[in-house]
Length: 81
Image (tube, rainbow, N blue to C red):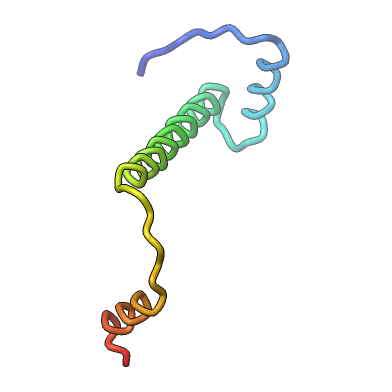
């Protein structure tokens, strides 16, 4: 595992140390690694949502929903009358 030295303002350093002391994290490095994992997951989720928005926009203009036809399709798919 690589290491990295970072500089933090005193209030941030205190915050990180306090988070490590809560018992949820083994040490300050564990806390920072958790922050990075969460940030990566958030960025991946944003990218996934953006891809869905882009696909929707690329699919063309919206068309009005025919409720009766929609209900009929659902009934047919589920074996209903």
